[in-house]
Image (cartoon, rainbow, N blue to C red; front, side, top):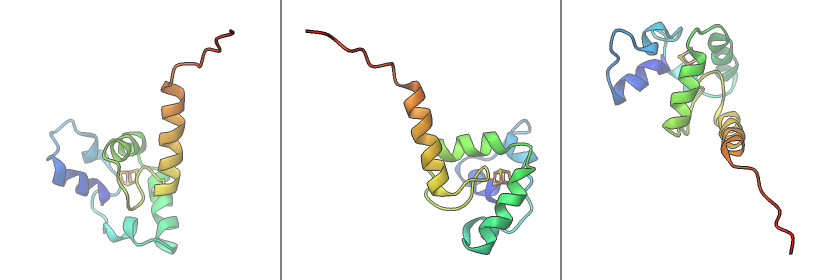
Length: 96
Ligand code: SF4
């Protein structure tokens, strides 16, 4: 129930994506234990209807631990790099 950890930052309103989280009533340890639990967490996240929102919030909060949006820290860092690269304006070569 890592979505509930987001609740600690701000409580959800009735339209909040966190209310639809598949993990909402699950043990948070499943998402933070590593090892075999990581694969189990990924499986749960794979069918979560708010996976994208969860990932976006984890990236915005720079979450350093656990599985969020189905991704580990290393995978989230790769997504963050890709997103930053896409936002960067194209480099212009100036000839002298
Ligand atoms: S994507 Fe995973 S961690 Fe995120 S809310 Fe859904 S089940 Fe929970």
